[in-house]
Image: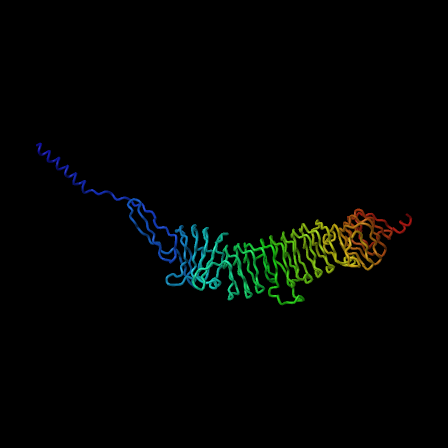
Length: 546
């Protein structure tokens, strides 16, 4: 019995041992980590990523294909995206073929969210860039183009390279030997007559541009954010400059041709330009007596502009031409006597202007031409202006000296149309007319010439004059507000030869006594002709008695 029990125990132990020897260890779950970081993508080959298990070091691979996605359009193949799944990429060459077809274009923010991207290579096959190239790529420094500079000028670019305000440092093209050269001092090739849109936008290391005299147009945004350009000479051959061509450049001196009705502020660099020299442009061979109008406009709100030279064929300073140029203090006319008209608000808010001589050829001047020129102290007005339709100065502006380049008789032949403030003589602390010897004299009292037949509306409104005025027998009418607010005027003598006096002729002449030959107000005189001034009727008899 005991022997049987021992046998059974031994048999069970043996079976247990046999069972244990046949049992295998359970397999672990692999924990893979990427061991391949793609920092360079040059040949448009499939990206093979390697992974290694952290537990058993087993290696596996994964084919990610091209980093690019493509779109086939009627005109060819476009790259639409570079995958953001490779954030370590530093250098990328755009593909030049897809399924055996050439890649001709880029669109849809091709490089998006690639924070380490430094270098981009553009193959010669690409001739169109239809959208921003970069969005969320803050470290882009270099763009290499595999064609020549001439080839690059054939590129069609529809938007600036960066979605935001970013720039890149260096732009390279290939020379005739196939070697890369950096574009720093750009010389426009002789074959190029039209510079396309956005060609060199955002390239900070372009320092200068040399144009030849066959260039006719400069494209939109083409040199925007080229911040090292400090001087520009644009040839007379250029007849078109598109918007933002030089936006955010650092240009200090600018030589640029006159272009009819062109808004120069649209080129984008006038916030920092200090000195502008306008040339004749396509009118370089025109004579100064050309009868056509050449209107200068478009320097409005050029916040850096201090000095401008205006060519001789300009004959109209257009509406708001220099409005809001707070630093403008020097205006040089190559032929001031060719200026015929100065339009509304032409120099409004030019706060640095201290003096201005309106050219003697000007026959028409607009509204608010010098309004808000807060430091304007001296103004010279030519006798060629026969009418002021509106105020050229704000009514509360006081200039130290206003010089009128004519006689009192000439002044009496000017028409003032729109209120007392349209008479600039009222803005002067010191007003000067010319005498018979063509010499300026300070107007302290008015001696009216016996050649005038009327004293027009607002003729002496707000004048800083005193003393006595004798109205000559030749005068038949004194019109509306003729002496309005002449606060220091003391006496005026009016004889029966004056047939008509209009409303408010002497309103707000608070210290004035009016001596009239009439015994009472004639029916032809306005009932409010004298305001609150004291009137002495039948003055000849009254004075004789006194």
